[in-house]
Image (cartoon, rainbow, N blue to C red; front, side, top):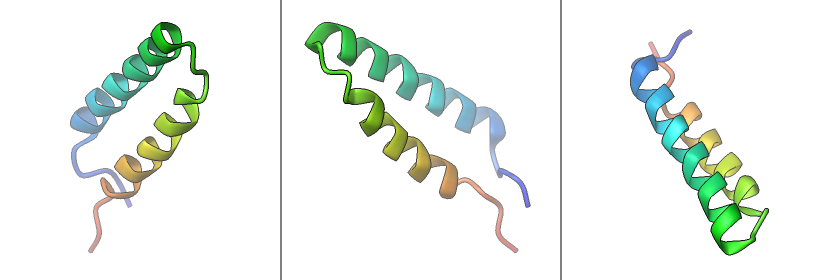
Length: 51
């Protein structure tokens, strides 16, 4: 089992992390990390190769 597009997934996760950090700092909402965590779970679960 592996990820179908690992570089694409890595870029998407990086954007998600950067966005969560930015929102947390600008809006003073640390809960954005929890939102990013849930979104990351979806990205990761949908990126696996299935046979």
